[in-house]
Length: 131
Image (tube, rainbow, N blue to C red):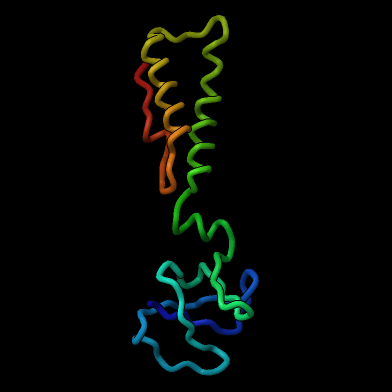
């Protein structure tokens, strides 16, 4: 269990979490700041505390992304975008010399888009064309 220091600065729909420590490591603070129990994933400066229902949430999507990285949906979207951008190869006059390698590249992007899981994933680093 962790403890979050919340005060008077508003963030999101509640009070900004300014610091998080392990339970037992709290220090004295002046009112109206106070320590509250929080989940282990809460990070100072990235979460707010809603005192009406005693819940924590990300200040905004960028804060969530900074800590957790992209969601599975964002990974799929990134891979799908790269895949969509390779569709020009179906046009007459394309300059691809090794059709089998190019098809393997597109297949790997398709698999990546279909099977991407939450966590950091960079489709450009995961699948490198060799054609």
